[in-house]
Length: 242
Image (cartoon, rainbow, N blue to C red):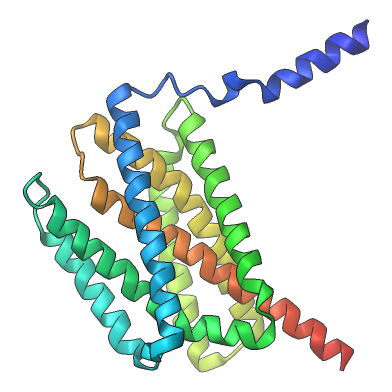
């Protein structure tokens, strides 16, 4: 009997109450739906951009497409959010995500040469990480993750410096530290950015398009890091066999 009661209590962890978002106001929930709908469109257009790369060779213009995507992001940031500009800003956003997908082309080509299945594994891994950390953030009833902002920005600065210096050192150990650091850092950014979006909406900021940019960048960086990590592991396995 005691064992049965213990099992029953343990199963409460998987009860629907765990996914209860009643602590999030209705207008915030509606806003989150807009954000994630916009993010979904961005992911689809990025996938289309990556697909386009393989048939047009635009990935050869990696620097230009990267600069163009940054230019569109800057344009989006400086375009005032209003009902009248929503369609224009959505066009800018999809252009930015499309070019971001094209910029992934050279990396995807390198991955395919090692093992094409790595792409689907990295996509699945990105989805698991992103969804898990998003739920953890949304289910939290306090604003704990908002205090991570300073730590995350400091970590990003140090990782950027590490990546830059490794251009000259060419150390495999530093590169591994850098890429695993990127994976961990942007996973934590999902926690932070999700709670920040909720808090911004509570304070009246309903710019769902710009807020989806933050989440899009988080997801892309996680995906990129997983691609590199999995490709390196597979490449090392093939070298050992040879």
